[in-house]
Image 1 (cartoon, one colour):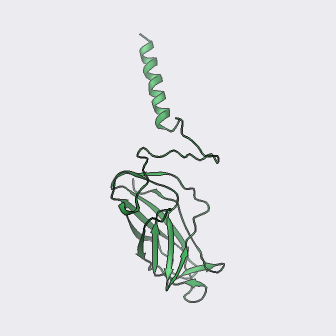
Image 2 (cartoon, rainbow, N blue to C red):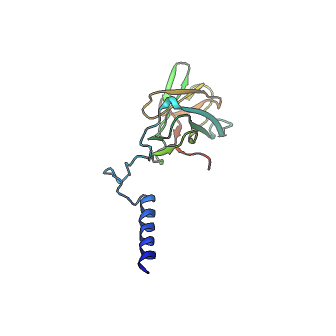
Image 3 (cartoon, rainbow, N blue to C red):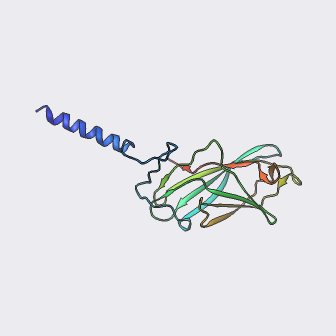
Length: 177
């Protein structure tokens, strides 16, 4: 009679290990998992909507601000891959916002009607030379298959080293609960 509880316990342990990623995920040479989500389908830009809101806008030149962009999936379950593509535009000038060097991109499963987010951290610049008087924020998926333009109302963005914005963008992350 003792064999039944041990068998049930062993099966439960095997299930837990599989559910926690203890299975045979393939990995790239850098040790990062390359397994896809259960849906296995990359998110389509046309199914996503984006909205921006300042978490803490930079009030004056030299101050650092953070802007959160919320991504809502209007399609079927899918997976967000890599970093979002972010650009700032001002009077015919477009500059790419680099990825946060401390952030690590991950595969992020996104259920239908679920949300994810990413954060843009920027340094407010003085109006005039040495800054980008940004008016538009353009966001999209890493493959840039489609983008969404949002108003930028957070002041000029400081430039460093020529035309590189003093800003960075985080990886996609789970939003909400």
